[in-house]
Image 1 (cartoon, rainbow, N blue to C red):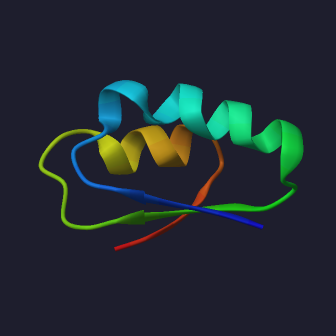
Image 2 (image 1 turned 30 degrees about the horizontal axis):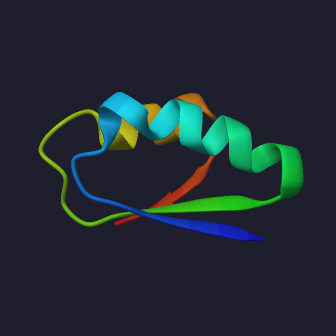
Length: 51
């Protein structure tokens, strides 16, 4: 399992999670109240999100 903490990382999150999925079957993204599209990008990659 991979865990990605993220705060206002929407511009790079899709690429990071896509690359992590090569090595991890399960990836979770922990969004710490971002004001950009971090949550939307995590959802776009089918990453389970938490805030």
